[in-house]
Amino acid sequence: MKVLVTGGAGFIGSHLSERLLDRGDEVMVLDDLSTGSMDNLQHLVGEDGFDHRIGSALDESLVTELVDDADCTVHLAAAVGVRLIIERPTHTIETNVGATDTVLKAASKSQKRVLVASTSEVYGKSTAVPFTEDDDLNLGPTTCSRWAYACSKALDEWLAFAYHREKGVPVVCVRFFNTVGPRQIGRYGMVVPNFVTQALRGQPITVYGDGEQTRCFGHVQDTVEASLRLLDSDEAVGDVFNVGSDREVTIMQLAEIVKERAKSDSEIVLVPYEQAYAEGFEDMPTRVPDVTKLERVTGFRPRTSLEQIIDDVLADLRAKGVGTP
Ligand code: UDP
Image (cartoon, rainbow, N blue to C red):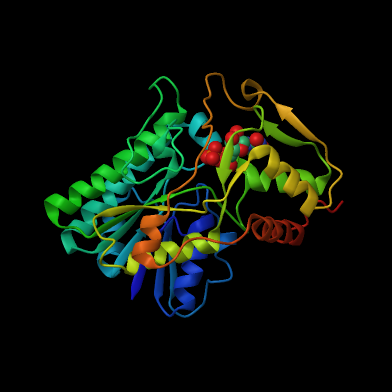
């Protein structure tokens, strides 16, 4: 099978491309390198079955050519990361909605399967535990940039289902929960690479707010496995799935686990939200996925322990020289 991976030079995309090649598929990556990097793909360049194009998922003629040439598409290209979204809301909305529209339009001509990457952000401020796929969405006001990301991704899902119902395009939507692992960078605010970097450098570990907010962290390899099983499943077509771990930790506990695994002397400090983000920022108090549907359809649920995930991130950042003078 030949798979087009938009956003394939990104953190999740590069791991997914690697796994596809390992199992014998051909891979074509399309990436504009805005947040992704060729460093993530360098080890695949030159491998049998791997090819890449530097370009935008908004480029209609390029996307049409690549979608036509592939058997299916995994559409990951998007503006991601809370910090980026707050700093560049226009770019976020236009990229996320425009690129998904371009990919689905191309796929509708050839009736090719598309896996559309969405996010747990679409559940918004809901305090339900866990989040189930058919829960109501509870987004904040349009005056708060953070919700532009959730809204753009919710629209991507609506667009995918619209193409499915009206034009018969085989689509699968996946809502990624916090995904962590080697190659993730902290530049856009992601907490685990930030904490691990701070711990390795002996700098204060910056916990935002009171640290009582919770998240569940899944290993990128589990995210990839779940996504590929969904891509391969006829039963998954026309539906949406949570993908993530359901082990809940507070951000304060996360800081303590990182400090312990890194054997770091860093102190853990609380940073008020107003200082960490732009004014008007709203954090999500909790975020736990219900992965029952994922497990029923694919027979798989993410299970890598948080300790193992942190050890992998530590090893990756140490190998890159982080924390060595
Ligand atoms: N966070 C933190 N310190 C950091 C970066 C993030 O305490 O250096 C917090 C952030 O406020 C949020 C949680 O960690 O409550 C997860 O943040 P991230 O940006 O990784 O993901 P998301 O908010 O999308 O779950």
